[in-house]
Image (cartoon, rainbow, N blue to C red; front, side, top):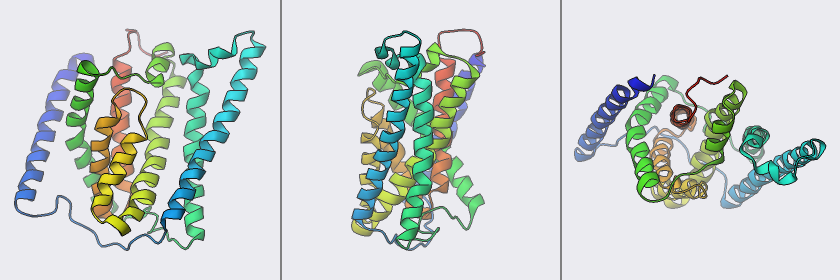
Length: 282
């Protein structure tokens, strides 16, 4: 597989270049990069966004505290210092808890907004042309992956080394269970919860106030939400701009979730290939 990475990367860069060239041509012709689909402004207000943000923090805190307590009991039972809870191998329960918290938050937030008068269309969970949305999602993914990964690699190599507990976790545990936890968190839970909150709840409200500038604000907020692991948050602002524009034009977050899932799947795949061990995961 590794010998094929070079040709695959070359094809990906060429495809991205062709896509970027097409976008430039559309911009020069004063045409929208993505044809807009008419949709109504979201009905919720800034206070609703704040309450949902607090709900998200509560979900994280509750599940996180339960996980920490459980880890402490296990470590004490095994006669190991509680400080060992920060070891890479102990990240598994926290990953599972984080994924579950995000998956619980999304329907809860949707229920709150529905009780506030929002429809399923307002929530962004409907797309009258799903096949077209899927094509746009794949096209967006093809275009943004090479440049964003290139920026991330340059920042990692020349500025600040990127560090993340998931990297240490996969290096310490290459089992199918560990990989499954990472995929659940990064490829399933995160795309659903983060795209819903940042691209629909937050950006949807900002669009009623700022118009097109809402895409920039939500993208910066998305990037800053990932601060703490080197400069990996910088290319994520670019990712947020791409998916934010897609959400703005489509009025739906479903294509954005697909882009996010595919992007994270590539990132996890590269992490697996970069692991020091040469044997396949057990």
